[in-house]
Length: 330
Image (cartoon, rainbow, N blue to C red):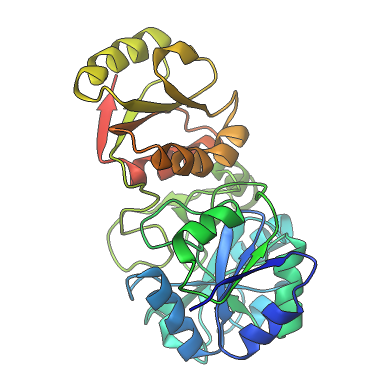
């Protein structure tokens, strides 16, 4: 299959492709999504085939607004979903609600719930409006790989697998949306993301954390994700002296080692180094891009240094934990 890259100002061919049941990769404020008509079961099945995605991993439906959400839910909208939508839509927040049974089973992964969000990106919103139906869209990468934050990363994974990629430049947030299950009391954080747990709690009060047991109600819960080809070693500490000592020991086994770390660490420790910056917002924006860049250099291992769980830092930690083959507590 030939893959074409479109300029972000020219989305009409992408809308027509979606209407015809084809797949389109497009930018959102979080990461690039791989979209299909969310009402077309055959088109949505092509997402799983293109990504190599497990069938029990549900998809997120993208809508413009609350009326779009109401058309997808069964019965009254949960109170927590009402509050979260009012506070954070459009934006990087996904709510899990009781599903309208008309939603294709492949989208819901056979569950009685559906995950829905309203993206805050002009290209994504133009596509939804042009299609006139919700767009089902996970991240536009091969299953298990780091999510793409720019069109070149989509091309790396999906060229020859999908017909169209819309190039909208680098994404703003850099990590996927926060997912909150609003069918439980209290609501449950299924995946940390672009909206911090503290902000979610400020709107709905108590928030439970997913246990890891039971059905997979949202993406990112069950399988190893965000992993490059190189092994990933997570140093769960940012204390400079402890990290330097650990890196010195690791370099004996991994002489061609690459490091991703907060800006406070000295860059001279290793040859290949990518800074996550001074705060969690910058780290979220840079993480996947840094992993993909270093992976192309084929290091013996990629060492990621991260400790923070505050705000967006929890989402950064979640992605590193999913990517890591080894975790070292310092």
